[in-house]
Image (cartoon, rainbow, N blue to C red):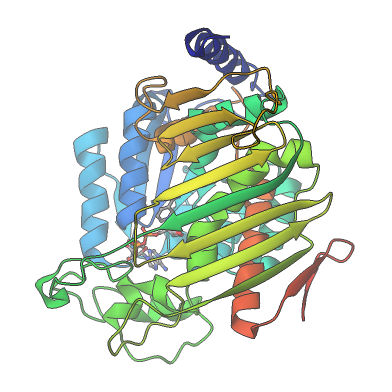
Length: 441
Ligand SMILES: NC(=O)c1ccc[n+]([C@@H]2O[C@H](COP(=O)([O-])OP(=O)(O)OC[C@H]3O[C@@H](n4cnc5c(N)ncnc54)[C@H](O)[C@@H]3O)[C@@H](O)[C@H]2O)c1
């Protein structure tokens, strides 16, 4: 089959798959102009971005009534986005409980640092609010498990911020796997490589990887430092603007590479090949790495270099690597099957190549020809987050199912926590599916 005919057929099938995802009605729209009333917790870098994407894809469905952030600068930024894009003025607060406890709020977006996900999500679920919760679902396995249990008991809609599931390239990849393009699958390679300009003086404000710009005006008061620490393990730490704005570098607030980045890739591996492998969680993980690229005196705690090797039930292996000192290979997953390979690169390009490549004289193992797809050219989808948010809001309105429910978020996060534990203990870790507990060494 020619690449063009194959592409046309595939694109038709993706549209059908999307249309079939409709689910049961959950609630009907409410509030002014019949829109869902949205309470927004945290408008930092991701929160502001997701909010912008929400206005792009779903302006017709929402009215943001509350914005909450403990840093005054970001609180003002969030309010400004609502005023500019939504044309209304939201209430503002530094206390997330004001948002959750307002009976007029229908849905809550949570884009706070990782250590705050659990208290905020649990409070929202107890108040029976639908939530869009940024990944990872929790800072620990136990936190995630409690969120899943309450979400499923409460029967509200939870969408975890693993937006790759709404990326049409991955929806396509999943379909291709189901249609036999790669055959039996035992191996996936996933990676995320980044770099930063080491020649630039950080004092001049140019961000290095995970050393994001700290606004000049920050103080313990306008960041509400005490409140930031409320959900952290150590509560008596003196004010640190680095900890507040660059929280990913510290174990108290983040699992580092494994829960910040890797979870996207364990998630999408499950999404794309999980059905074929028939296994959701690994049996074991062995992770290693260190702070190799960072250099210089620094109080960074999490590694900038990490590899994690996973063995899953049913003879499936996931090979993950991440390095912050060379971005040549970018971001990607390679789903390597017996009949062919699907690679999704930088969340922008999908390529399919049949097997084999090098065995001289061998007949092709697949009847499918090579294929390439591009996120803009073939799908006109610049940012999957817009569709991820729309999918969430549609689910709340009963027009579909959330594509990344709490359980999927937890299945993505457990391997991340396994990698953190293995890295920190310098030992292999094992997942006991019967007890849902991790064993170290
Ligand atoms: N899905 C994705 O692709 C993606 C990308 C980036 C970040 N994220 C996730 O988004 C979340 C936020 O990351 P970020 O990069 O925006 O961090 P950030 O530091 O830029 O923003 C965090 C915001 O939370 C606020 N905050 C902290 N404690 C708070 C509290 N108790 N109450 C209210 N506000 C509080 C801070 O003032 C800040 O504005 C994290 O969970 C991260 O993992 C997801």
